[in-house]
Amino acid sequence: MVQHPGPVSAERVIAIPCQATHRRVKLTAGLPLLQAMTDAVGGAGAWFDLSDVPTKTLTFVRPAPALDDHHVAWYSSETVLQDATIRKAGAHLGRRDGEVFAHVHGLWSEENGTRHAGHLLAEKTFLSTDHTVDIWVLEGAMFETAPDAETGFTLFRPVRTTPVGAPNAVLGAIRPNEIIEEGIAKSAGKTGLPVAAVKGLGSLVGAQLEGQTALRDIATEVLLTDAESEGAIAVGFAGSPISGVMIPGKNRVCVTFEVLLLLSPT
Image 1 (cartoon, rainbow, N blue to C red):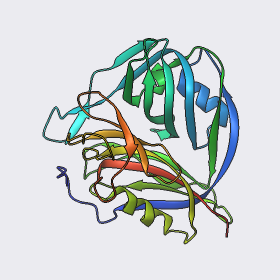
Image 2 (image 1 turned 120 degrees about the horizontal axis):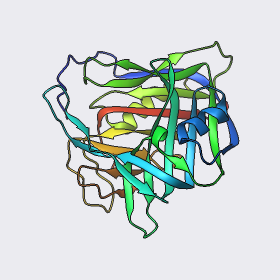
Image 3 (image 1 turned 180 degrees about the vertical axis):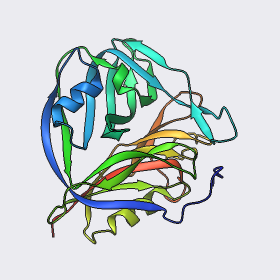
Image 4 (image 1 turned 90 degrees about the vertical axis):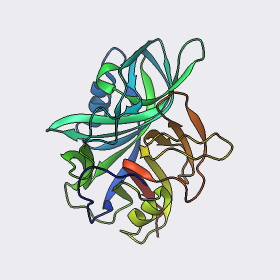
């Protein structure tokens, strides 16, 4: 459990039913990744699966100890890599202060094979060649940032956009100290439909994965890596990524966890 500096919000899961449409789109080389993603969806909210994406410049940060008493953790200084490859990452595309913003977590490697993980800065990352990726474009909901009194951070929260008919997805944000699989189940309960796949990223209090040495830092950056939301890539303050199946009941949200649940049809 983690104690944040602000008052605990009564609402522990925010989830909005919506529609998600799968597409394959081309990300254009030479542009900031954020611009390439924005051009691919025309300003809509979306989830991006980013696999084996070649970059000319890749900029990222990792979790780090807090710099003040108003946050439980913070970010490291920026690391800039040349000619690195995004091996596996996910991105929520939404809005911050009225402008397009991407929240991206994942795993990437240098040319010599050295692996890194963390929070990728899409506005400071450039593709070296055009690359086709899978995305899910949202209708009826998207993420927008808002100040969060509990954590002291400005965080993505799902908001309603246009009315939709029968939803086939849920866009959700899970708050601190929720066990991650329980928070996903609460989000899915907004529709009563079974979940076919889970896309998501966020922070956990440490990370406990099967067959891996547990990360004990107060905050880790995490990407879910399989449809069942069991697999994850995680990185802590030291910067060495781990991956594997999350141990049930052992992984609680630190600051926030943002998910897109793709639902099974009735």
